[in-house]
Image (cartoon, rainbow over all chains, first blue to last red; front, side, top):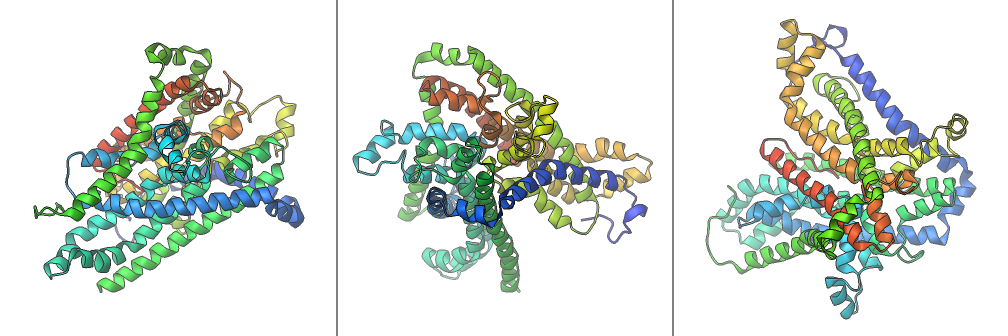
Length: 284
Length: 277
């Protein structure tokens, strides 16, 4: 990291500005992140265990948590499958329009979520082009949990594709060709080489998409219909609690969501460390 | 490079390609087409009328003025964080980097909520602010704070790895030749990291202009006053003014397309994409 090898740091460092930049970084993080986040934590536990239990056992809250985590899991699974295929096709195949498709994969990152929300609703609403078709086969999308899932698929896709692409690129040039030149069939190369070696990246992408789906708001609230107990996601319930001036309730629900996404991210980090070791052992 | 050399007519490959292209057309191109076709449904006159409406103008102005404050804030922070993290060694560096990433893991609604808990009427500073007749929540400062929170990592996390890869040899050489710290920063470090800097600014800008969840919690939806562009889209949509809603949305979509173009161009020029929201 440091160019000149082992160097004495602290005051004898030739480069100035460590204290200033570090101090500014910490103060800024403190003001923008930590003070507000500690306000949340204190508010959530401030009502005591009794309030905590009361909020979390309310049927409406439980229904929204079940909907949010359930649909996010389904959407992340859909994205794991289609993201895997998309990344594979984008890395391995050459076809006209590939670069445009590759660039457009990031659209859900770049498009404001409110725009994604109303655009998806226009497509999947009962009078929309696809909504009509889906309703005619008895599977309405907008204003149902399926609609929530569709929005989460849209918002989560880039995470899986962008995590898998580098893994495929690394692999494609080395192991895959070696295996096929040794006589393995494409199916064997896929199931015995490609899939096991890129599984950690796939799980990482899956978890990132899952975390994003759980926390997503803007692209979902238009297509979901927001019916309490049926299509009301947890983020929206937090806003509802706020509008009712139930700050403690909002804070408790927010803490549950935060804890869930931190546990997910922790799992991703552990997995990445573990898989690095695992790959290193495999190569040795 | 990795393209397969054989030209055999391969059914599996064509089927795979078809599935992927259909999926992307449905989920990514579909919404794009929907935005523009819905926006044009009532013709060009109605389309442009959506932007001359005073509420729309105020939303455009609010979005621009918010972004104009948020980007410099996060830019200075990003440079400071990247300077100490990329050019020095200290214990706890990995922890600091994960802390900077924290807003990515937090739902936008929660990002808005935390500021309501600090500055809202029943929040920590609420009574004090009320005494002095200062408004943070349901006003411009709250929108700026929530947007800053959500976009905090964008510039820092592009700069840090880029500056780490560049090492510190050139900075040390400049120092030995007598340059001051600021001279090193402005004449050596930042010019060398300009692509990563630009990349971070482009992403930060897109998110700042498009943020919806966090801003919707702190804005209070005062029409013509605290509605940003995405909130204005929501208001129009909920009032069943669909063409106007999609017209305003098409402006934000153009912004997203420009962002994608710039992003792709910068990635081809050597900036590595990080998986970011």
